[in-house]
Image (cartoon, rainbow, N blue to C red; front, side, top):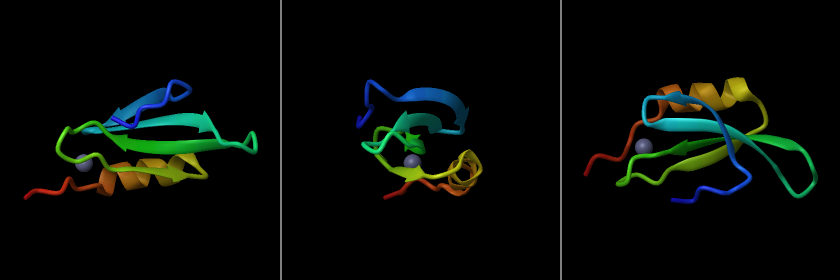
Length: 63
Ligand SMILES: [Zn+2]
């Protein structure tokens, strides 16, 4: 799990957690992290709405 200790989870959409963290420039980033063990997908977004959209449209790799 690439869970960082400065990651603050704010919501869960399906298997995907959305949380905020600060990048090295002090800007707040919205990260979407899939909690499914077989998936491991994660991505950073500059807005929470973008992260929510990605979480809703995320499909775990099924193979
Ligand atoms: Zn997934």
